[in-house]
Image (cartoon, rainbow, N blue to C red):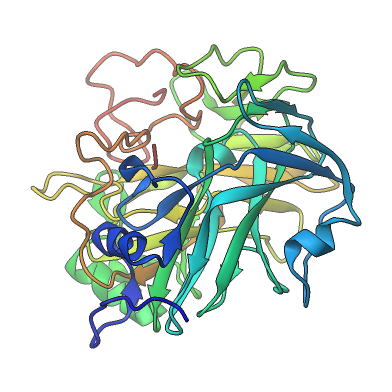
Amino acid sequence: MAPALNLPSDREGVLPNQLLSDAISAGVIAADSDIPEANLQPASLDLRLGEVAHRIRCSFLPDTEPVARKAKAFIEDTFSLTGEGVLLEPERPYLIPLKERLRLPPNVRAKGNPKSSTGRIDVFTRIITDRSYRFDEIEAGYEGELYLEVVPLSFPVRVREDLTLNQVRLSVGRADLTDDEVREHHSRVPLLYENGQPIPADELALSNGMFLGLDLRGDKDGRVGYRAREHAPALDLTKDGAVPPAPYWEEVHREEADRVVLSPRKFYLLMSNEAVSIPPDLAAEMTAYDPTSGELRTHYAGFFDPGFGFARGGGSHGARAALEVRAHDVPFSIENGQRVCKLTFERMLAEPTIFYGDSGQGSSYQRQTDALGKHFLRSTPEPKGKKMAAAGDELPFGTEEP
């Protein structure tokens, strides 16, 4: 029987950090070792890699079987993640048992997503649970282990035990906001800015979520982002500190008319044109988006915590979102302002006691003006006083979870 969890009976929404802490104390989220307090985020929990990684022949879903039983037919090799860890090869799937497990009450469900820094190095991850036919979606009342499918796509990456590549959110009831609710909330507390000003509520592009456009004006040199290099060296995720980006990334510059032609199957890091602000009573998710044409896909990483781009004392004009973009089978032209990604919003069950961007939270992307993740040295900032054309942030082009 799942342990009881004392939750507000008159509200629906995403569990904040203090209720996630209660869930750990109650055994709803459990592990054989203590779960580090630092892994608690304002609206999610970072999950730790276990002691082994299995290289598997193909991805799979367990459907009616436990993951461990279904995986036996696909395991090709098993590696220890203790000590120095192991190097994961590009375009090979790996199955890694996570240290945390769940005993969800009947009214609590969960959802997984890669961390922002995981998506920005083009490492694809998704949670697999026993007897499930869906990735990342964990049904209410689930009791069992958690497994992570990990597929490096651009670079070889070294990982080890206790490294955190993904997150999980817990929620009860109907947490998501309708388009009308998003528009009404934006009218009271702005969620989206352009050029430092809230976008008028009637100009929001909404369709089961809020669409964001691309910034393809970039900096004074026309740089708009980065493209992953082929045959890059291994990226060691087990070491602290950032490395020079040049061996891994080449700069992308705009063409005339502020456009870029994406090369097929290449991975790009770009920035949103608008700046996002997530107030304390909301959480958000950047959903993977395929245009109707099916020629590109944006964004693997998803969770935006309460406090992203938001200043409790006022004065903030949001923070831009980094967009992970990959064209499919043909070259594809994108233009400045083109809408290529979508944010969905969820209400919080209660306001968190910690916020994204708080001192000590290790928030890497609160004032981001550059798409590179925390593993890479950021570009040298331009002189003060150069106004951001796209977002209204005070930092120049070139600089969400820990």
